[in-house]
Length: 347
Ligand SMILES: Nc1ncnc2c1ncn2[C@@H]1O[C@H](COP(=O)(O)OP(=O)(O)O)[C@@H](O)[C@H]1O
Ligand SMILES: [Mg+2]
Image (cartoon, rainbow, N blue to C red; front, side, top):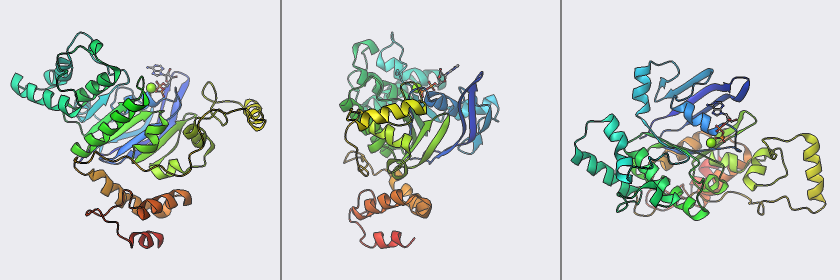
C-alpha cells in the first residue's frame, strides 16, 4: 500500500506575496485525491512543497511519518525516492527516445544491468499503453502519448506516492478521460497514493476518492468526494459549474461591486456561461474490468463510515445513496448488502 502524506498548518510565500497559509490535509494511503483550484492559487507550489523542492515557512509535512521540513538532506533524498511526479509539460528530454526518457531515473539512481533496465522500462511502457513507441522522440508523438510517457517515467522507480500536475492540460476531453482511467488502473495495480492537481471539473467529479480546493490563499475544504461535490459553498458551486457569477473573477477574485453587476446581468437574462447545473453526485469511475480491485475502495469505505456522523447532511445523504445503489459499497461477491443502509442510518 502507498504511504500517507499529511500537511499540518503549512504556509508559503514568495517575498511579500502569500501563496497560501495554514494548509492542513491528509492524503490517505493508497487513495486517489484531487486538489482543485483556479489558476494561480498555488497548486503547483503545493506539489513542489510535498517533495521538498520548495520550502514552506511554517508548519510540518509528514511523508510516511517523517517530517520532511525537519529531516536531514540525506533523509530527504531517500524520501524523494518514494515519489513519482508527472509534471504539467511531461518534462521529457526532447532529444532522447521514449525508452531513454523512461530509463533515465533508473540510470541515475540505480545500478541495474542493461537487461534488467530494459525489462523494467518495457513493463512501464506496456502499463501506459506505449509498447511499440519506445524508439520515438517526444516531438514525434501526440500530447496524450507524451503525458503517458511522463507517467511511465514517474512509475519507473516503483513509487509509493504519485503526484500529477494538471494531467488534462493540452488534452481533449476524451484523452483526459483515458489518462484518468489509466490513473485508476495504475492505482488498482500498485495501490499507490495519488494526488492530482487540476482545474478540470469532469475529472474532479468522476475520478478521486477525496477532493480539496484552494482559493484565496486558503484550503477551502478537503475530504471525501461527497463533501465537496455536495457543497453549497459559493466558490465551490461556481467552480464546479464553470460560471462567471460568484466569488471567482477574471483575475483571481472579484470585488463586491463587480459581483453585483454580474448578478444583475444574469438576472436580466444574460448567460453566465457553464453548462446546466448538475445536481447530486456522478458515480465514481472504476478500474477497468479485468484489473485487480482497487484496495483503496474498501479502506475508504471503512474510513468514511467512521466519519459519517461528522459530515454535512448533504454529504452524508450522498454516501448513503451510494450505499443504497451498491455503487462503490458492493460486498466482495458483487451483491449489495440490503442491511447496509439502516446500519449507516443509525449513526
Ligand atoms: N519560484 C517561484 N518564485 C516566485 N513566485 C513563484 C514561484 N513559483 C510560483 N510562484 C508564484 O506563485 C503563485 C502560484 O503559482 P502556481 O503554484 O504555479 O499556481 P497554479 O499551479 O495553481 O496555477 C503564482 O503567483 C506564481 O507566480
Ligand atoms: Mg500549476
